[in-house]
Amino acid sequence: MVVVKAFRVLYRILVDYCSNCSLAGVGYISNRKYHWTERLFWMACVLFAWTGSYMLINTYMELFRKDAVSIVVENLDPRKDIAHFPSVGVCEMGYTKQQYDALQQVIDGLRTTEEMEYNYDVEEFMLRLIYHNLYNYGSIKSYCAMYKDCDDCVKCPVEGYPRFSNAVRANCSQLFDECRWNGKVFDCCRYFRPIQTTMGSCFLLNSIQTVSKYGPQWLRMDMSMASPKGELQLNFSRATTAYVQNEEDIPHMLLTTLQFNQMPEGYAGKIYITAQSIANDPLVRTVDKSVRRCVFPDEGTDHRYAKYSYSVCVTECLKTAQIKTCNCCHHNMLLGKNDKSPVCGYDGLNCLDQRDLMFPQTTIMQPWRTNGLVCDCFPSCTEHEIRIIGRETDMEARTGRSVLIKIMSLPSQRYRRQIVREDIDVVVSIGGILGLFTGASILSLVEFIYFFTVRFGSYVVTEIKEEESADDESDEHDKQDNRKVLHHG
Image (cartoon, one colour):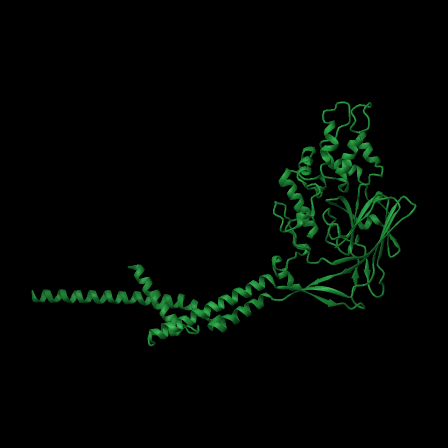
């Protein structure tokens, strides 16, 4: 009985709403004055209008999700705009023609008796662990397997690789001879700050991963019409690799486009580049990263590095793949003193070697790769476009190495990432579509809520009063009938 009453009240509300609502065409459907064919016609029109509005809104939302951001090119005013020299990374590289006294001391420390001869195979093994550029696939077992059961020879160490790497790799003062910006000497080790990467310990200049931007350890390398020259001269005492990169990037073994090796003694290289910056409108941050297809450096809060970048994401992706596959990671993947990740010993390195995770192919970064090692990484929203327009190489009669990085001209244009559709545009567009097809407005929503709350409650109260009134009348009739019976009796 209660269910029947509820449906009766709901039906009355529905008929009342359809007869009085502001939605176009709905009133004709519920009006009994019209012939059923007319009411059917209006029902078809209303259904057609609502279907059309749904399809248009669905299409618009697809465009908003996929095409809400555009990148345009805008001109710069060289009299006012200031250009910035890119960040530079330097990593020591292994060089087989170079003598490593610290490594020889490490291997001498592995001798258990004075009669043991120096083991050059162990030296080759250690070089390939400490310097990634010397590693080649399958080299872990090839240098050590023959000495596994040997009692009177130096064996390959099975653990402690981070300690050996720290002892052998050069620190800043050992690696750099001199640094110059536009011919003026500056303190290399004040501005080149250490950081751990897939290439081992490296040093970054003007990187937001290591120092605060424009802080005391940030070298101002600004260029303008008043000072258009941009030359960075670096002199090294050991074999190195220099990386020209964005301020949020780090050196990485898989990102070799702007990598320059200075290996043999006497090497002198010159690199000529251009840099085109990108600016982001403030509203770009309001769009989800899956729509804008990039991440701002301060949005990567789940990374061990200070800021997000594509190279940071790829580094941690490779580390995750190593731990997932072999339950440990290469010692170069220890990102800071507080990193408690499991470090591979000899067996773990064999696992990485056999599964091609020591120095994987660049296909690990391809989104269509399907064998379980996909790095789904977005680029940084602040990445500049750095291009190499020329290179020169010369050999000089000296023991050091040097590289000159020069910006050939000040940029005359830059990219700008801007919003095509904002959140307010979505509201306006959807409201316009609903108004065009159905006559709906914000008051239509208020109207709907009113009818099915306030008016519904009023109908319920009316229904209860009618039932009580009917019960009272029924009781009065019963009393009158009882009096008539007694009177006639």
